[in-house]
Image (cartoon, rainbow, N blue to C red; front, side, top):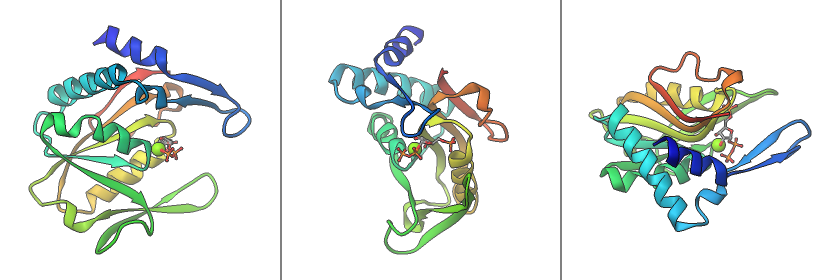
Length: 175
Ligand code: PRP
Ligand code: MG
């Protein structure tokens, strides 16, 4: 596992001052541009979810890089994948959650019909920084009938302490 994570970490690129001055952007896209890296990513996500969240019935991915993470592993686990999207993107009846940004608020939504009361949900995203995105998703799932069993991010920016207050949170690469 450690060697696989090192290989994944080594292929991601850092971009200082992108998209704004002072931010070092971690580019996860090299994980997907090569089939062997994609397999490696699927291996580590599959092993982690099987070990930490054995009862999971659905992965719920956070727009948009969480979609890539979820889809890299859902079919391997034999579980469904459901997206959480920014407001106005999903049709039909949705469950909605407002959350606070640095300036102002935003809203995330999930299709009501995509979850069942018996579902055991694992949230998945590429990275946790402040934790604002993940906490909004935790609240959103909390307002549905499904059960949230945990949350998984490939990368965690440790010093921001974004995971504080999120139950059963797992991350694999620490920066
Ligand atoms: C990034 C990242 C996480 C979120 C983490 O997404 O993919 O979803 O920020 O930040 P936080 O912990 O401070 O909330 P971004 O909003 O850049 O959008 P994207 O996934 O659509 O690229
Ligand atoms: Mg994101």
